[in-house]
Image (cartoon, rainbow, N blue to C red):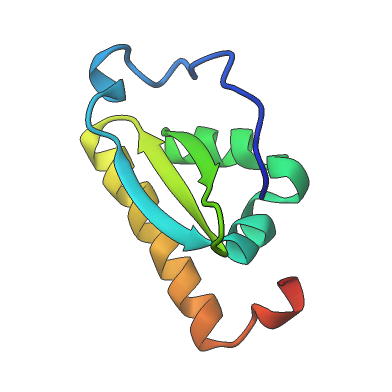
Length: 101
């Protein structure tokens, strides 16, 4: 997804500093994130609001994977990670991805 601009604000539902400790970190195929978050991550603020988490994406060099870092309370971090990985699994199983690459 490329490099997104640096974070300027922290959503009001994220409690500083306790929700910024121990983020959930995982990797997802970049094409899936483009489909989920829209061009240039335009849907990230909406996804953050719905999931009550804060997301940070880091493109991995020489890979088709993007690192997703999720900040927030323990349950919201786990729930956000779970639904993102389940969506990736479903799209891969249904072979919905090749047209997005």
